[in-house]
Image (cartoon, rainbow, N blue to C red; front, side, top):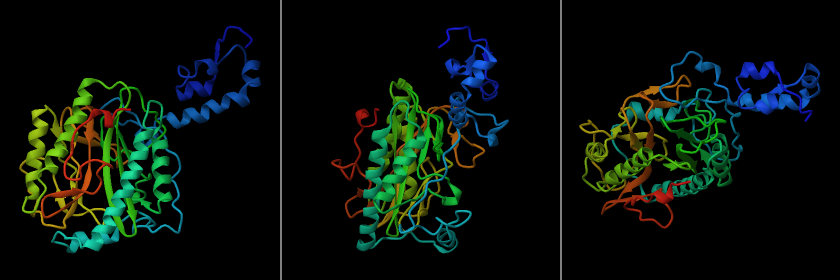
Length: 370
């Protein structure tokens, strides 16, 4: 407020690389001015440190413009809430899933009682995703979305399935722009023109539910809108095939047909999966053509379909956090996911939006525009 020319810069601001961002707060007219304002000014450093790239990314070659930020501490689940076996395991290993991989060769058909439990988990998951989706806007951080998901999940008596699953540090996956999947929420603010996928999974009374959607943040370019629509319609095309007798490998052929017609590509590294008492189990549901998935659908099978669609190459790269998968060429990626059960006449989308059909999907950009 002295109106003198500010010729000196805070050395800590220079070190953090934030002078341009905080120019009005990071420059001073004299050493005495700097010292007299230090108690107020140092708060800028606390906020800025959240936005610096974590040290494990030093010398890493990024494929696109997105950069990671620091993360808030892991959120706590109240002890009275039932939790999966990996929740308190030091390395997040699911012993039950490991045993299932070693011994299980058949796809389970769930009983009516089990289906009721999974349906309730999916209903809770849908409520939580809708809450998080409504919070998406320019300027909100993915850490804030994680807080919303975490608190909404535990308020409903459920455990956020991603938390500590093989040491995943957060309660939801948030995948922005070139991130294909498994993005870790941090302090980066969503920007005008971003796209963000929110992947919610909950564990309730012994059963998991899993779903995700991609949202358009502000003024999104046409290519990204077309990508998001392609991801949605590729899932819709696969859902239309779900009925008794369909081979699981056929889904990838249909997804690839829709994707190629739109000039996009299908990620081959990650796939849909069976779900129920276990977060991930058989069947494996690849999303690409000419895959070798085993088995055919029967009444009572419960699984996810979740194609990851890219504007550019289908190839992916893993960030040094060992979770965040990004496109190899830095192009954008989009995804939608439903958990479903095979019925006598087709399928029921257990994670369908309230008021929408449970056996098919219809695109509307307005649903995902924020």
